[in-house]
Image (cartoon, rainbow, N blue to C red; front, top):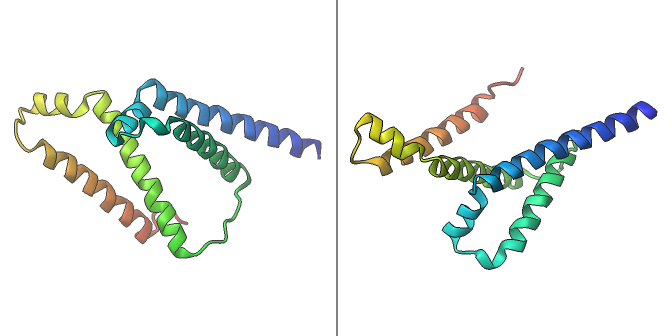
Length: 140
């Protein structure tokens, strides 16, 4: 029993540290500020803060306790889509903040079609994710 309590405390602490690090990275690099600026939703900053905190806590609890969520396939599809949009948006915002695309295009001498480069990168990410789940890669 004491071992279970200890493991629970260590698991929660580790999860909160990792989640806090991710949130600190997002805030420090200005990703959240960029999201707010793009969507013109500055009046809902408190909602963003609550959603980030709630997401970190729920993610930690679901990861530590491996809780089964009995929902239908359609709900899982919607949740997966929203998570994919979030992660994709986060990666693109991070790449934009550190000026990956302008530096990359300048070094390769690309002057036109940068929009298509971004679109094809996103399409490749989507296709790769769909193939990953359809082919069940990583499942033993």
